[in-house]
Image (cartoon, rainbow, N blue to C red; front, side, top):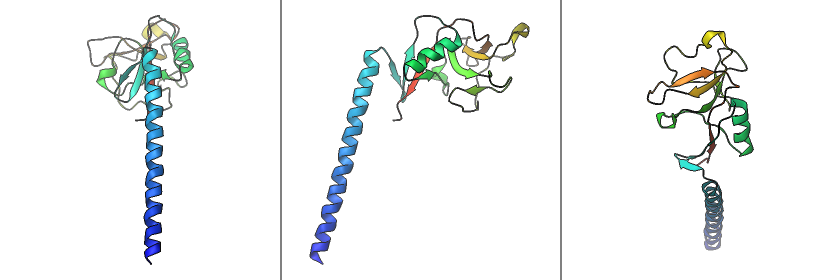
Length: 157
């Protein structure tokens, strides 16, 4: 009986040691990842890294740049993320059905009054943040227009 209890204790300690080792490895991986992004001028905020462009490109070229960096155009889920830039929202697949580029539906939006509107009958299928000082700042725009953008890479932490 005593031996079994000791074995159980040893097994529990071994599992705890393995769990601790896994946590240390995960933490080291996070530190290396964080260091990598910070050295490339990414900004960390609330569980994500953000890359802010210094040039202007079309919506698709902006998205391709983000994908090449292992990220995607920013998905706005807080007021703090609202800046004038391309965002990862479009209705290119189905007119009038706005979705984020990770496939999630648009639940909460910050459209400027009267938007989206396909102004003057133009095919405005991509979203930007336009009106910086307004909470409701989104505008639909022709996807080939050039604009700045933000890439977002979620850390999973």
